Amino acid sequence: DVVQSMLDAAEIQDGMAVLEPSAGMGHIADAIRKTAGVDPDVVELSGARRELLEAKGYNLVGNDFMAMTPRS
Image 1 (tube, rainbow, N blue to C red):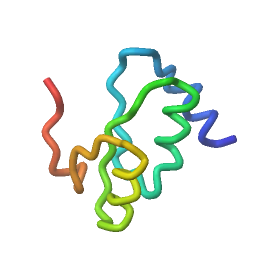
Image 2: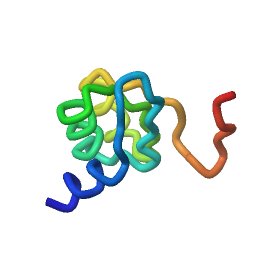
Image 3: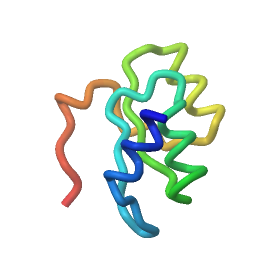
């Protein structure tokens, strides 16, 4: 329920760039993909979880979102 409320508030639409800055095992990213039809970019520090996210087909864009440079 919390994730769905968050996605409703975000109003994610097709074509939007979405970042999951601390993706963990990808549960929120999975919900974004399923509900909004958008594949989010993901960031994750843990090597094992990064491997899981890669296996799920997510685009890993970093391991520390605080060190990232925003897209232009």
